[in-house]
Image 1 (tube, rainbow, N blue to C red):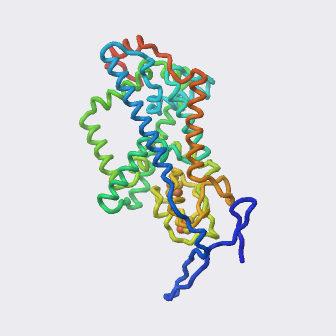
Image 2 (image 1 turned 60 degrees about the horizontal axis):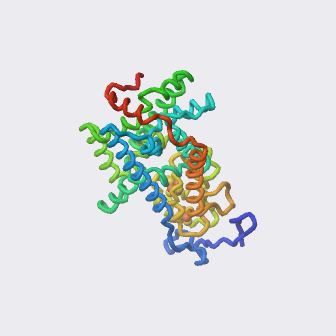
Image 3 (image 1 turned 90 degrees about the horizontal axis):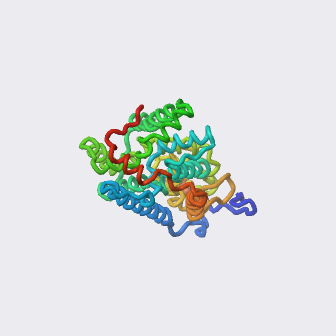
Length: 365
Ligand code: SF4
Ligand code: SF4
């Protein structure tokens, strides 16, 4: 009988047999029931909730900071630095500025560190940021699950629309990358230290606090479409996800399938929110894989799908992946805090005077 290896030190007899049905078809079955999985892990939902509440907390703190600004009693200490995680273009500029000068800017340093953490995660652990940390990803997922409850299923766009639409996020990303990469060090420095960049988070707040009719229509349309189509915004529109998808292509860690124990049931592919043909692949190399573990959870056979550095090893369980992801993220945030680089250096007085003329501050491009 064949044997296969699941750990470098362990070989196991395949628990799978091929059975011929009356109609002549052959199907694979698990012969040894001890190889069938039992139970599911909810760890990803807990981590998503953790980051969602963290985002809410940042939102409330920032609201209080803005309330102070509007009353003319701002305090820089009241401003939550984590809000800079919502300024990815500024972070991209900070990143390039750092690569060219070795300097971590003091205007949005936390945005820079969050960007580094997210890039590191995607480069080594696939796009885990999207399905574990990002609050927009969490909302998108909740919406399509709600849509599935309401309509009994989610829908897919025909390939001739899906493929060109998926390239939209790469076009947006290319626009931002080209714009940032053509700036000289002096231009980057002057943007980073500009009034516009200093109040970019305040402008973002005001955008949502006084949202225009057009923005309401666009956001409303995205919400409705997200009920029908899985991760509509993430799949078609998010340039941040596109960037992480590209860097995730070199990730040594990826979903791998053990062909010897796979029973070709297709449950992994059915469960994949990115519609990847996991059941046909030995390793999932796609930029669309968000390391969500849905395929691993759906697979009925133990050790057949795993997130690992190479084939033939057992890989990381969902809990181990969660620990690593959270460890990398908060590890980098912690290092930035300990180094005194987390909080920016824009004073309360400067925030107050910038806020007084906020309407006249533009990016100048
Ligand atoms: S279901 Fe599997 S292949 Fe699909 S996105 Fe999630 S981890 Fe990747
Ligand atoms: S879920 Fe996918 S990997 Fe697991 S047995 Fe079925 S087809 Fe094979």
